[in-house]
Length: 464
Image (tube, rainbow, N blue to C red; front, top):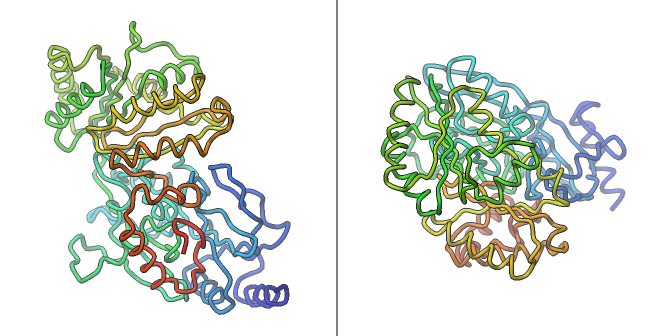
Protein backbone atom coordinates (compact mmCIF):
# COMPACT_ATOMS: atom_id res chain seq x y z
CA UNK A 1 0.00 0.00 0.00
CA UNK A 2 2.78 2.45 0.92
CA UNK A 3 4.56 1.75 -2.39
CA UNK A 4 1.35 2.45 -4.30
CA UNK A 5 0.83 5.69 -2.40
CA UNK A 6 4.44 6.71 -3.02
CA UNK A 7 4.04 6.08 -6.75
CA UNK A 8 0.84 8.11 -6.77
CA UNK A 9 2.44 11.04 -4.91
CA UNK A 10 5.39 10.97 -7.28
CA UNK A 11 3.04 11.18 -10.27
CA UNK A 12 1.12 13.97 -8.55
CA UNK A 13 4.29 15.97 -7.90
CA UNK A 14 5.17 15.77 -11.60
CA UNK A 15 1.71 17.11 -12.45
CA UNK A 16 1.66 20.07 -10.06
CA UNK A 17 4.10 22.78 -9.02
CA UNK A 18 6.18 22.60 -5.84
CA UNK A 19 3.82 24.91 -3.94
CA UNK A 20 0.69 23.21 -5.20
CA UNK A 21 1.22 19.85 -3.48
CA UNK A 22 1.53 19.55 0.31
CA UNK A 23 2.01 16.39 2.35
CA UNK A 24 2.51 15.45 5.99
CA UNK A 25 3.22 18.30 8.42
CA UNK A 26 2.95 20.82 5.58
CA UNK A 27 -0.83 20.27 5.58
CA UNK A 28 -2.39 22.75 8.01
CA UNK A 29 -4.54 21.30 10.79
CA UNK A 30 -7.53 23.38 9.65
CA UNK A 31 -7.70 21.22 6.51
CA UNK A 32 -8.83 18.30 8.66
CA UNK A 33 -12.04 19.88 9.94
CA UNK A 34 -14.79 22.38 9.14
CA UNK A 35 -17.10 24.66 11.13
CA UNK A 36 -19.00 21.66 12.44
CA UNK A 37 -16.00 21.00 14.69
CA UNK A 38 -15.96 17.29 13.84
CA UNK A 39 -12.43 15.98 13.27
CA UNK A 40 -11.35 14.46 9.98
CA UNK A 41 -8.12 12.69 9.14
CA UNK A 42 -4.84 14.12 7.89
CA UNK A 43 -5.20 13.68 4.12
CA UNK A 44 -2.68 11.75 2.08
CA UNK A 45 -1.95 15.05 0.30
CA UNK A 46 -3.38 18.51 -0.18
CA UNK A 47 -3.44 19.78 -3.75
CA UNK A 48 -4.07 23.42 -4.67
CA UNK A 49 -4.56 23.61 -8.46
CA UNK A 50 -4.47 26.95 -10.25
CA UNK A 51 -6.74 26.17 -13.19
CA UNK A 52 -9.24 23.68 -14.57
CA UNK A 53 -6.60 21.81 -16.56
CA UNK A 54 -4.71 21.02 -13.35
CA UNK A 55 -7.91 19.88 -11.62
CA UNK A 56 -8.56 17.58 -14.56
CA UNK A 57 -5.07 16.08 -14.38
CA UNK A 58 -5.38 15.51 -10.61
CA UNK A 59 -8.71 13.72 -11.00
CA UNK A 60 -7.39 11.61 -13.85
CA UNK A 61 -4.46 10.53 -11.69
CA UNK A 62 -6.75 9.73 -8.77
CA UNK A 63 -8.83 7.51 -11.05
CA UNK A 64 -5.76 5.76 -12.47
CA UNK A 65 -4.37 5.06 -9.00
CA UNK A 66 -7.79 4.47 -7.31
CA UNK A 67 -7.20 7.24 -4.77
CA UNK A 68 -10.24 9.01 -3.21
CA UNK A 69 -10.52 12.79 -3.49
CA UNK A 70 -12.33 15.26 -1.22
CA UNK A 71 -13.05 18.74 -2.65
CA UNK A 72 -12.68 21.60 -0.16
CA UNK A 73 -13.92 25.18 -0.31
CA UNK A 74 -13.78 27.66 2.56
CA UNK A 75 -14.43 24.91 5.16
CA UNK A 76 -17.41 26.82 6.57
CA UNK A 77 -19.79 23.87 6.21
CA UNK A 78 -21.70 22.51 9.17
CA UNK A 79 -22.38 18.96 7.98
CA UNK A 80 -18.87 17.53 7.62
CA UNK A 81 -18.99 17.34 3.81
CA UNK A 82 -15.39 18.57 3.39
CA UNK A 83 -13.76 16.32 6.01
CA UNK A 84 -10.91 14.30 4.47
CA UNK A 85 -9.81 10.77 5.32
CA UNK A 86 -6.23 9.57 5.69
CA UNK A 87 -6.28 7.70 2.36
CA UNK A 88 -7.72 10.62 0.37
CA UNK A 89 -6.40 13.66 -1.45
CA UNK A 90 -7.91 16.95 -0.31
CA UNK A 91 -8.39 19.31 -3.25
CA UNK A 92 -8.58 23.00 -2.34
CA UNK A 93 -9.93 25.51 -4.85
CA UNK A 94 -8.49 28.47 -2.92
CA UNK A 95 -6.08 29.47 -5.70
CA UNK A 96 -8.81 29.51 -8.33
CA UNK A 97 -10.33 32.68 -6.92
CA UNK A 98 -10.78 35.07 -9.84
CA UNK A 99 -13.81 37.04 -10.95
CA UNK A 100 -13.20 36.42 -14.64
CA UNK A 101 -15.93 38.51 -16.26
CA UNK A 102 -18.92 40.66 -15.38
CA UNK A 103 -21.52 41.61 -17.98
CA UNK A 104 -23.57 44.37 -16.38
CA UNK A 105 -26.02 44.59 -19.29
CA UNK A 106 -26.77 40.87 -19.20
CA UNK A 107 -26.62 40.69 -15.40
CA UNK A 108 -24.09 37.85 -15.30
CA UNK A 109 -20.74 37.14 -13.67
CA UNK A 110 -18.27 34.38 -14.49
CA UNK A 111 -16.12 33.29 -11.54
CA UNK A 112 -13.73 30.55 -10.53
CA UNK A 113 -15.00 28.24 -7.82
CA UNK A 114 -12.57 29.43 -5.15
CA UNK A 115 -13.75 33.05 -5.12
CA UNK A 116 -15.45 34.06 -1.87
CA UNK A 117 -19.09 35.06 -1.67
CA UNK A 118 -18.04 38.48 -0.38
CA UNK A 119 -15.81 39.05 -3.41
CA UNK A 120 -18.75 38.26 -5.68
CA UNK A 121 -20.97 40.66 -3.75
CA UNK A 122 -18.38 43.45 -3.90
CA UNK A 123 -17.74 43.01 -7.63
CA UNK A 124 -21.49 43.14 -8.30
CA UNK A 125 -21.97 46.19 -6.06
CA UNK A 126 -19.24 48.09 -7.95
CA UNK A 127 -21.48 47.86 -11.04
CA UNK A 128 -24.69 48.82 -9.25
CA UNK A 129 -25.80 45.18 -9.10
CA UNK A 130 -26.27 42.59 -6.39
CA UNK A 131 -25.89 38.85 -5.99
CA UNK A 132 -29.02 37.23 -4.59
CA UNK A 133 -27.46 35.05 -1.86
CA UNK A 134 -26.03 36.26 1.43
CA UNK A 135 -25.15 34.61 4.74
CA UNK A 136 -22.82 35.13 7.66
CA UNK A 137 -19.81 33.18 6.31
CA UNK A 138 -19.62 35.46 3.26
CA UNK A 139 -15.99 36.43 3.87
CA UNK A 140 -14.73 32.83 4.09
CA UNK A 141 -17.06 30.58 2.12
CA UNK A 142 -16.28 29.93 -1.52
CA UNK A 143 -18.71 29.90 -4.41
CA UNK A 144 -17.88 26.30 -5.28
CA UNK A 145 -18.77 25.19 -1.77
CA UNK A 146 -21.92 27.32 -1.72
CA UNK A 147 -23.00 25.69 -4.99
CA UNK A 148 -22.09 22.21 -3.76
CA UNK A 149 -24.49 22.64 -0.85
CA UNK A 150 -26.98 24.86 -2.72
CA UNK A 151 -26.62 27.33 0.13
CA UNK A 152 -29.41 29.73 1.02
CA UNK A 153 -29.26 32.41 3.70
CA UNK A 154 -31.00 35.74 3.99
CA UNK A 155 -32.01 36.45 0.37
CA UNK A 156 -33.88 33.25 -0.45
CA UNK A 157 -37.33 34.75 0.04
CA UNK A 158 -36.69 37.24 -2.75
CA UNK A 159 -34.24 35.53 -5.09
CA UNK A 160 -34.00 31.82 -4.23
CA UNK A 161 -31.04 29.67 -3.25
CA UNK A 162 -27.73 29.15 -5.06
CA UNK A 163 -29.51 26.82 -7.47
CA UNK A 164 -31.65 29.71 -8.70
CA UNK A 165 -28.65 32.06 -9.01
CA UNK A 166 -26.73 29.83 -11.42
CA UNK A 167 -26.95 29.92 -15.21
CA UNK A 168 -24.03 27.61 -15.90
CA UNK A 169 -21.18 25.57 -14.46
CA UNK A 170 -17.88 24.09 -15.48
CA UNK A 171 -17.40 20.71 -13.81
CA UNK A 172 -14.60 18.15 -13.84
CA UNK A 173 -15.80 14.56 -13.64
CA UNK A 174 -14.11 11.79 -11.67
CA UNK A 175 -12.13 10.57 -14.68
CA UNK A 176 -10.87 14.07 -15.52
CA UNK A 177 -13.31 14.90 -18.31
CA UNK A 178 -14.52 18.52 -18.28
CA UNK A 179 -18.16 19.51 -18.78
CA UNK A 180 -18.14 23.10 -20.18
CA UNK A 181 -21.67 24.17 -19.24
CA UNK A 182 -21.08 27.94 -19.05
CA UNK A 183 -23.84 29.02 -21.41
CA UNK A 184 -25.34 32.42 -20.53
CA UNK A 185 -28.89 31.89 -21.83
CA UNK A 186 -31.77 31.81 -19.38
CA UNK A 187 -33.70 29.73 -21.92
CA UNK A 188 -31.76 26.62 -22.90
CA UNK A 189 -34.09 23.65 -23.26
CA UNK A 190 -31.69 21.09 -24.74
CA UNK A 191 -32.36 17.92 -22.80
CA UNK A 192 -31.19 17.23 -19.27
CA UNK A 193 -30.08 20.30 -17.32
CA UNK A 194 -26.80 18.68 -16.34
CA UNK A 195 -25.60 21.49 -14.08
CA UNK A 196 -28.39 20.71 -11.63
CA UNK A 197 -26.86 17.30 -10.90
CA UNK A 198 -23.84 19.00 -9.34
CA UNK A 199 -25.55 21.78 -7.38
CA UNK A 200 -26.21 20.38 -3.92
CA UNK A 201 -24.19 17.20 -4.61
CA UNK A 202 -21.45 18.20 -2.12
CA UNK A 203 -18.64 17.17 -4.46
CA UNK A 204 -19.79 13.55 -4.74
CA UNK A 205 -20.48 13.69 -8.51
CA UNK A 206 -17.82 16.10 -9.81
CA UNK A 207 -15.68 19.10 -8.92
CA UNK A 208 -17.15 22.50 -9.74
CA UNK A 209 -14.36 24.71 -11.14
CA UNK A 210 -16.18 27.74 -12.61
CA UNK A 211 -19.67 29.20 -12.43
CA UNK A 212 -21.81 31.62 -14.41
CA UNK A 213 -23.92 33.51 -11.88
CA UNK A 214 -27.02 35.65 -12.22
CA UNK A 215 -27.02 39.21 -10.89
CA UNK A 216 -29.86 41.57 -10.07
CA UNK A 217 -30.23 45.36 -10.04
CA UNK A 218 -29.28 46.64 -6.60
CA UNK A 219 -32.27 48.24 -4.88
CA UNK A 220 -31.91 51.94 -4.20
CA UNK A 221 -33.72 51.74 -0.88
CA UNK A 222 -34.22 49.26 1.94
CA UNK A 223 -36.45 49.71 4.99
CA UNK A 224 -36.26 47.50 8.06
CA UNK A 225 -38.89 46.86 10.72
CA UNK A 226 -39.22 44.79 13.87
CA UNK A 227 -42.73 43.50 14.56
CA UNK A 228 -44.00 41.71 17.68
CA UNK A 229 -46.62 38.99 17.29
CA UNK A 230 -48.42 36.84 19.84
CA UNK A 231 -48.50 33.47 18.05
CA UNK A 232 -47.17 31.76 14.96
CA UNK A 233 -50.45 31.94 13.01
CA UNK A 234 -50.33 35.72 13.39
CA UNK A 235 -46.81 35.70 11.94
CA UNK A 236 -48.13 33.80 8.89
CA UNK A 237 -50.95 36.31 8.50
CA UNK A 238 -48.43 39.16 8.72
CA UNK A 239 -46.24 37.52 6.08
CA UNK A 240 -49.22 37.17 3.74
CA UNK A 241 -50.12 40.85 4.18
CA UNK A 242 -46.57 41.99 3.46
CA UNK A 243 -46.30 39.85 0.35
CA UNK A 244 -49.44 41.49 -0.98
CA UNK A 245 -48.20 44.98 -0.14
CA UNK A 246 -44.71 44.36 -1.53
CA UNK A 247 -44.89 41.84 -4.40
CA UNK A 248 -41.32 40.85 -5.25
CA UNK A 249 -39.92 43.40 -2.79
CA UNK A 250 -40.07 41.53 0.53
CA UNK A 251 -36.39 40.75 1.06
CA UNK A 252 -36.44 39.18 4.52
CA UNK A 253 -38.93 37.77 6.99
CA UNK A 254 -36.93 36.36 9.89
CA UNK A 255 -38.81 34.98 12.88
CA UNK A 256 -37.34 34.73 16.37
CA UNK A 257 -39.03 32.94 19.24
CA UNK A 258 -38.74 34.42 22.74
CA UNK A 259 -36.02 31.98 23.83
CA UNK A 260 -33.79 33.17 21.00
CA UNK A 261 -34.48 36.89 21.52
CA UNK A 262 -33.87 36.73 25.26
CA UNK A 263 -30.63 34.81 24.79
CA UNK A 264 -29.38 37.13 22.04
CA UNK A 265 -30.03 40.22 24.12
CA UNK A 266 -28.23 38.72 27.10
CA UNK A 267 -25.19 37.55 25.15
CA UNK A 268 -24.77 40.87 23.35
CA UNK A 269 -25.75 43.14 26.26
CA UNK A 270 -28.63 44.68 24.28
CA UNK A 271 -31.83 46.33 25.48
CA UNK A 272 -35.30 44.91 24.91
CA UNK A 273 -36.64 46.40 21.67
CA UNK A 274 -40.16 46.74 23.13
CA UNK A 275 -41.55 47.49 26.57
CA UNK A 276 -43.24 44.07 26.61
CA UNK A 277 -41.49 40.73 26.12
CA UNK A 278 -43.51 39.25 23.25
CA UNK A 279 -43.55 35.55 22.28
CA UNK A 280 -42.30 36.18 18.73
CA UNK A 281 -40.47 38.92 16.85
CA UNK A 282 -40.45 39.23 13.06
CA UNK A 283 -37.52 41.03 11.42
CA UNK A 284 -38.58 42.44 8.06
CA UNK A 285 -36.71 44.02 5.14
CA UNK A 286 -38.46 45.52 2.12
CA UNK A 287 -36.61 46.92 -0.88
CA UNK A 288 -37.44 49.21 -3.75
CA UNK A 289 -36.53 52.35 -5.62
CA UNK A 290 -37.86 55.07 -3.31
CA UNK A 291 -37.26 55.03 0.44
CA UNK A 292 -40.00 57.53 1.28
CA UNK A 293 -42.57 55.53 -0.67
CA UNK A 294 -41.40 52.24 0.83
CA UNK A 295 -41.57 53.64 4.33
CA UNK A 296 -45.04 55.08 3.81
CA UNK A 297 -46.39 51.82 2.41
CA UNK A 298 -44.78 49.78 5.17
CA UNK A 299 -46.22 52.08 7.84
CA UNK A 300 -49.68 51.73 6.29
CA UNK A 301 -49.44 47.96 6.06
CA UNK A 302 -48.20 47.55 9.61
CA UNK A 303 -50.81 49.96 10.99
CA UNK A 304 -53.49 47.80 9.39
CA UNK A 305 -51.86 44.69 10.84
CA UNK A 306 -52.00 46.29 14.28
CA UNK A 307 -55.67 47.18 13.83
CA UNK A 308 -56.45 43.60 12.76
CA UNK A 309 -54.69 42.21 15.84
CA UNK A 310 -52.08 40.43 13.72
CA UNK A 311 -49.24 42.61 15.02
CA UNK A 312 -48.93 43.63 18.68
CA UNK A 313 -46.16 46.22 18.42
CA UNK A 314 -44.06 47.72 15.63
CA UNK A 315 -40.90 49.74 15.27
CA UNK A 316 -39.52 50.85 11.90
CA UNK A 317 -35.83 51.68 11.68
CA UNK A 318 -35.23 55.38 11.18
CA UNK A 319 -31.61 55.02 10.13
CA UNK A 320 -29.15 52.49 8.77
CA UNK A 321 -27.65 52.25 12.25
CA UNK A 322 -31.00 51.33 13.78
CA UNK A 323 -31.65 48.78 11.03
CA UNK A 324 -28.24 47.28 11.74
CA UNK A 325 -29.14 47.13 15.45
CA UNK A 326 -32.30 45.15 14.63
CA UNK A 327 -30.27 42.69 12.57
CA UNK A 328 -27.73 42.37 15.38
CA UNK A 329 -30.41 40.60 17.43
CA UNK A 330 -30.93 38.03 14.68
CA UNK A 331 -27.23 37.53 13.99
CA UNK A 332 -26.46 36.30 17.50
CA UNK A 333 -25.81 32.96 15.81
CA UNK A 334 -22.17 34.05 15.54
CA UNK A 335 -22.09 33.90 19.35
CA UNK A 336 -23.22 30.27 19.56
CA UNK A 337 -19.74 28.70 19.80
CA UNK A 338 -18.79 31.14 22.55
CA UNK A 339 -21.73 30.36 24.84
CA UNK A 340 -22.78 26.79 24.06
CA UNK A 341 -20.53 23.82 24.80
CA UNK A 342 -21.02 22.74 22.11
CA UNK A 343 -23.88 24.21 20.08
CA UNK A 344 -25.95 21.56 18.31
CA UNK A 345 -27.57 23.40 15.43
CA UNK A 346 -30.16 21.63 13.29
CA UNK A 347 -31.25 23.23 10.03
CA UNK A 348 -34.65 22.00 8.83
CA UNK A 349 -37.46 23.10 6.57
CA UNK A 350 -41.15 22.40 6.97
CA UNK A 351 -44.48 23.14 5.31
CA UNK A 352 -45.03 26.70 6.43
CA UNK A 353 -48.37 26.13 8.11
CA UNK A 354 -46.91 23.41 10.35
CA UNK A 355 -43.90 25.32 11.71
CA UNK A 356 -45.66 26.63 14.81
CA UNK A 357 -46.95 23.18 15.79
CA UNK A 358 -43.53 21.70 15.08
CA UNK A 359 -41.85 24.15 17.47
CA UNK A 360 -44.42 23.44 20.18
CA UNK A 361 -43.99 19.67 19.79
CA UNK A 362 -40.19 19.92 19.84
CA UNK A 363 -40.19 22.09 22.91
CA UNK A 364 -42.59 19.77 24.73
CA UNK A 365 -40.40 16.77 23.94
CA UNK A 366 -37.25 18.58 25.06
CA UNK A 367 -38.90 19.77 28.27
CA UNK A 368 -39.98 16.23 29.09
CA UNK A 369 -36.57 14.65 28.61
CA UNK A 370 -34.26 17.51 29.66
CA UNK A 371 -36.15 19.99 31.87
CA UNK A 372 -33.09 22.27 32.05
CA UNK A 373 -32.30 22.25 28.32
CA UNK A 374 -31.20 25.52 26.72
CA UNK A 375 -32.69 25.48 23.23
CA UNK A 376 -33.37 28.23 20.70
CA UNK A 377 -35.81 28.46 17.79
CA UNK A 378 -35.30 30.94 14.95
CA UNK A 379 -35.05 31.04 11.18
CA UNK A 380 -35.80 32.36 7.72
CA UNK A 381 -39.44 31.45 8.18
CA UNK A 382 -40.48 33.37 5.06
CA UNK A 383 -38.95 30.51 3.08
CA UNK A 384 -39.96 27.69 5.50
CA UNK A 385 -36.48 27.33 7.03
CA UNK A 386 -36.16 26.85 10.79
CA UNK A 387 -33.07 26.43 12.98
CA UNK A 388 -33.27 24.43 16.20
CA UNK A 389 -30.22 24.91 18.40
CA UNK A 390 -29.43 23.53 21.83
CA UNK A 391 -26.52 23.67 24.25
CA UNK A 392 -24.92 20.22 24.25
CA UNK A 393 -24.12 20.44 27.96
CA UNK A 394 -27.72 21.20 28.84
CA UNK A 395 -28.86 17.87 27.38
CA UNK A 396 -26.10 15.86 29.01
CA UNK A 397 -24.17 15.44 25.77
CA UNK A 398 -26.96 13.33 24.26
CA UNK A 399 -26.65 14.90 20.81
CA UNK A 400 -27.77 11.81 18.95
CA UNK A 401 -30.93 11.49 21.06
CA UNK A 402 -31.66 15.18 20.45
CA UNK A 403 -31.20 14.78 16.70
CA UNK A 404 -33.40 11.69 16.51
CA UNK A 405 -36.13 13.44 18.47
CA UNK A 406 -36.15 16.53 16.25
CA UNK A 407 -35.82 14.63 12.98
CA UNK A 408 -38.70 12.35 13.95
CA UNK A 409 -40.85 15.47 14.24
CA UNK A 410 -39.53 16.68 10.87
CA UNK A 411 -40.50 13.38 9.24
CA UNK A 412 -43.93 13.45 10.84
CA UNK A 413 -44.44 16.98 9.48
CA UNK A 414 -43.38 16.07 5.94
CA UNK A 415 -40.35 18.34 6.12
CA UNK A 416 -36.66 18.23 5.19
CA UNK A 417 -33.82 17.40 7.58
CA UNK A 418 -31.60 19.88 5.73
CA UNK A 419 -32.81 23.23 4.49
CA UNK A 420 -29.47 24.76 3.55
CA UNK A 421 -26.54 23.04 5.30
CA UNK A 422 -26.42 19.88 3.17
CA UNK A 423 -26.10 16.26 4.30
CA UNK A 424 -22.37 15.50 4.46
CA UNK A 425 -21.56 12.99 7.16
CA UNK A 426 -23.63 14.36 10.03
CA UNK A 427 -27.10 14.07 8.51
CA UNK A 428 -26.51 10.93 6.45
CA UNK A 429 -28.06 8.59 9.06
CA UNK A 430 -31.32 10.54 8.88
CA UNK A 431 -31.64 11.01 5.12
CA UNK A 432 -34.43 8.43 4.88
CA UNK A 433 -36.59 10.76 7.00
CA UNK A 434 -36.84 13.07 3.97
CA UNK A 435 -36.26 10.72 1.00
CA UNK A 436 -38.18 7.62 -0.03
CA UNK A 437 -36.41 4.32 -0.88
CA UNK A 438 -37.08 4.96 -4.57
CA UNK A 439 -35.51 8.42 -4.35
CA UNK A 440 -32.46 7.06 -2.54
CA UNK A 441 -32.05 4.31 -5.14
CA UNK A 442 -32.18 6.89 -7.92
CA UNK A 443 -29.55 9.01 -6.17
CA UNK A 444 -27.28 5.96 -5.87
CA UNK A 445 -27.77 5.20 -9.57
CA UNK A 446 -26.69 8.74 -10.51
CA UNK A 447 -23.66 8.46 -8.24
CA UNK A 448 -22.65 5.14 -9.79
CA UNK A 449 -23.08 6.48 -13.33
CA UNK A 450 -20.92 9.57 -12.79
CA UNK A 451 -18.44 8.13 -10.29
CA UNK A 452 -18.40 4.35 -10.82
CA UNK A 453 -15.31 3.84 -8.64
CA UNK A 454 -16.86 5.92 -5.83
CA UNK A 455 -13.72 8.06 -5.45
CA UNK A 456 -15.34 11.50 -5.16
CA UNK A 457 -15.98 12.53 -1.56
CA UNK A 458 -16.68 8.93 -0.52
CA UNK A 459 -18.97 8.30 2.40
CA UNK A 460 -20.74 11.66 2.11
CA UNK A 461 -24.55 11.93 1.64
CA UNK A 462 -25.07 8.22 0.82
CA UNK A 463 -23.81 4.83 1.88
CA UNK A 464 -23.23 2.82 -1.29
